Amino acid sequence: MWFIAFVMALAINCASILDAQTPKFDVATIKSNRTGSGSSNLPVLRHGRMTANNVSLLDLLDAAYGFTSLTTRGPDWLNTERFDITAKAPEGVPDTELMPMLQALLGERFKVQVHHERKRMPVYDMTVVNAGVKMSPFDGSHFPAVPPNRGGSMIIGVLTMEDLARKITFSAGRPVIDKTNLPGRYALTLMFTPVSLRAGSIAAEAAPPDLFTAMQEQLGLKLQPNRDDVIVLVVDHAERAPSEN
Image (cartoon, rainbow, N blue to C red; front, top):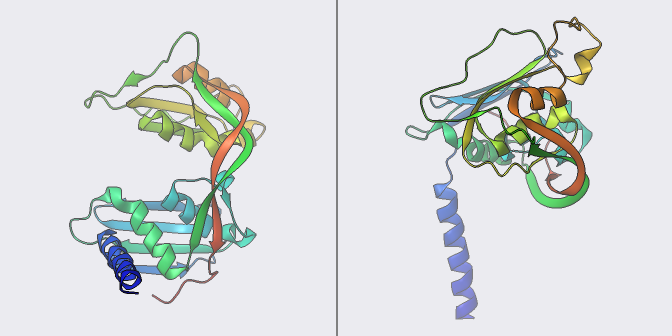
């Protein structure tokens, strides 16, 4: 019996240590957003302060766990209820700690519980074209210039290929798997017109190309259809209304 008691005490102690090491927001205010606006600002942590406006719980889950709506499974209302959030991180906690702090916040205020599963589904493999990439490895000094906005969508920054694959997944319409074997980070600019806008408000002659063409012309990468096992985020439990501020 003493051995069982010792193991239980050790497990509780380890859990307490891990909980103490996980950064959490000092304060956070969550309010329902009933504006019906079609625009939103996803969670961003700058100088220790996080803001998010008109976001769904699905948006928050994706930001907290690094998934997208295409690889998150849960009830339909995750994408209908909208919220405004402001939060303050503890002094000295870097802005790079957004994900663990947001995970803790969702667990405390929305009682979120999740697990991961593997699911076989249609994907795009992101590979390098035969002629080679048209991006420059980031050397710490030259950031990509911001070109004139011709409408459509733009991805600009210093990214790993895994980061890029994650960012274009929603626009591609299925998970994008990095198969480039390119290490490190690249300075890149990608301008494209989403499918939903191709026949809409942007003049055809002025519009950027579609995502698949833009990837090849601007980055030297291509998207090839395939099927593969993908890790998905499954929401086991979440409460529709957050606990009080």
